Amino acid sequence: KKGFADAGPLGDLPKTKIPMGVVASDRRKEGAVVALGSVAIHLKGPENATKIDNSVDMLLNSLMTPNADVQASVADALAKLMKKGNTQDRIEDILDQLMKSCLEGDSTSTRRGAAYGISASV
Image (cartoon, rainbow, N blue to C red):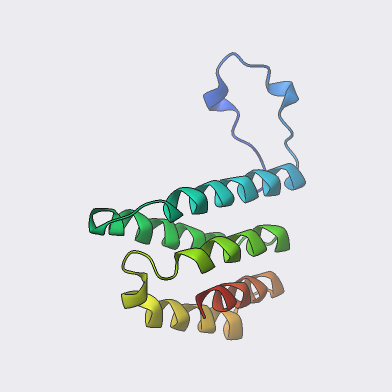
């Protein structure tokens, strides 16, 4: 069900105005990535470390989106978050996972996303 919008939560709003194509879905994902990264950047203190780590994990999962614009937005957000939270403690695991995806990924877009992630992590 990739590339389709879930219009259910909109209730009585006119669903005919919601773009349902893959390009619109990619734009929504890119917007969500930018918003998530922006919010996570402003979290401070050790009490928010798990929230930052969860945001980093969500962004890393978003690297598998087969769209270069989304992947570039994720890399921009990740680069700013690499020194926050517990990310520095997990950097080896993150890089190992990204290197494996980059070298052994199923598709070109998966390998490209992992390469974006490596560039943001280093």
